[in-house]
Length: 391
Ligand SMILES: Nc1ncnc2c1ncn2[C@@H]1O[C@H](COP(=O)(O)OP(=O)(O)O)[C@@H](O)[C@H]1O
Ligand SMILES: [Mg+2]
Image 1 (cartoon, rainbow, N blue to C red):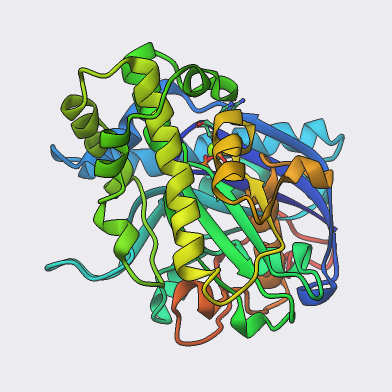
Image 2 (image 1 turned 180 degrees about the vertical axis):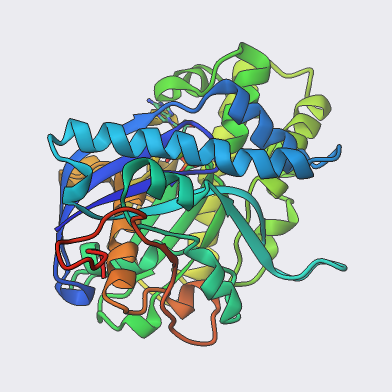
């Protein structure tokens, strides 16, 4: 069957839409990418999301409206990717939509309870395309005592596990996160966590200092020199010391924190700031591997995915910091760094479709395995017997 995966990450660089052919489920899953594209996010929506995350003015009306606005954006992405694949919406068994995270609270904090909020109204996506939508994947894991993140490990076990090899799958999106797949293939030993910032601080600094969205190819970082004092200061961030399980987001490493850092080190050359922020991301990855992975597992290889895989400065830093490990990208395996997360949500949606578990408690800290996702049925799709075809 065919399914669409939608992902819009913390980078706010766009909506990743993938159309896949899927067969089987769980360890028998076979998934093939038919079409992939990143659809850019409207600047107004981006600004509204940032405003909500900054939380410095009343935003209830904005959140309510954003949920629907994002729903329309996701709907357009679905329409486009189906067309690009030369299919029709009735060919699609389901759309698996991650949504846009507006806030993620992995742990209780003062009067606030552990919770997470992803937006992009599934009713709109379902109505506009007459397709079933599986959404809101994170909340059931939170209900089961987990942090609701990361969720990609389930698909990584299925798609990348290799007998006898300890493999780290490193995603470098807005945030960096890693999954450790042990070579003994025991999925109860798989664990994952957020390593710290991915491209988020680099992107924000590029915007403020150069008026650009990101450091294309890592060229700016490559032209600068790492400032040791700034790097040392960054490496004292409390997130790095925290024990597992842990996850982070725009709340910790977003606009607010990055601008504090830019103000504090405003006398440095711009390219040196970018070089240092890039090294910071690489160091958070290196240090978390040494502290939380390599103390137990000899790593055979790291496979890098997410937009950060296109940043040569980041890759060079990682190869220097981890000389004993083979550092590859998804492209080195013939796959796509950009499509990986959207594909992961197709795999998760496929488990929901089969009424099957897809959280990995070792990754999220949940008490048990549970079925993830809320289902919105295709609102007008009935077969000749008058039954909704999706069920
Ligand atoms: N060609 C490139 N050169 C350098 N960095 C890139 C390139 N393409 C994408 N990126 C980085 O990757 C980010 C997007 O990564 P992505 O994996 O989509 O993150 P998220 O899941 O948070 O949306 C961009 O914001 C940018 O920082
Ligand atoms: Mg993205």
